[in-house]
Length: 342
Image (cartoon, rainbow, N blue to C red):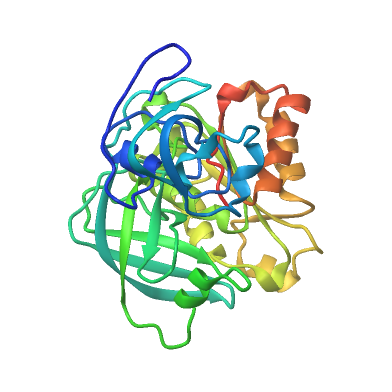
């Protein structure tokens, strides 16, 4: 494989293995964001050799313009294959990306469509706060991306927040009423939207729905190092309404642990917060409106503090928040961190 500057990298892929996953596991700095077929960031041009498309209906295929372009995350090779990138190869992944097996079990049902899961790993992996992993279940094609909700590097487990997708075979399997522990495949860690306490800067995080998962991992890390006491930071968490709220007790505990260094605003897009909810969570702030709009208002107010900006949530929300931060708040894209999957 060669990039536009002529730099080359080569690696082996097992039969049926996705090209992107094989390259990342071999330490190649291949381009990607979701690594699961939805974003299109891993596109490449097939120069020579035969390939097999594993998911012709992948949403990420909308970025493909030529007949010989492929999504590396949804393509396997038949024999030797030569590929070319329009962009540049990146540095090798750090931490190292690994594949292994684990046992996944549901630990808590938060709403009819949101639940927490824990995976007991065969061996621990190292990862950064804000990263995600790909999870696969035997018998169900493809891998799904989920962010780690805790930061416990070196621990033999990973924790995930999973949203049930209507008519989704993968999530429906996990949400089945009688769910035994399931053997799963894990590929990770992945993602660039990571929190680094050594930067010694405040942050503004804007999360919609289940996008809160990666932010929980960031909050876990900030709490362990006392970051928000030194660098006051904010999180804006978007939900539909009071009836759909979840994890507010966890978020309130995070605020209380910082003695005011962390502020969390819960934004309801469809109606005001119910008075009883406000009374039960006095450490949280509540607002009405779309999370990207409320997050944008906070970004403008905090601009002089020069925070790092984190985005997570549905693609439409992330795109709207990105446009607002860049166009209206005049934030440089280099100051905005997000991983596009969903």
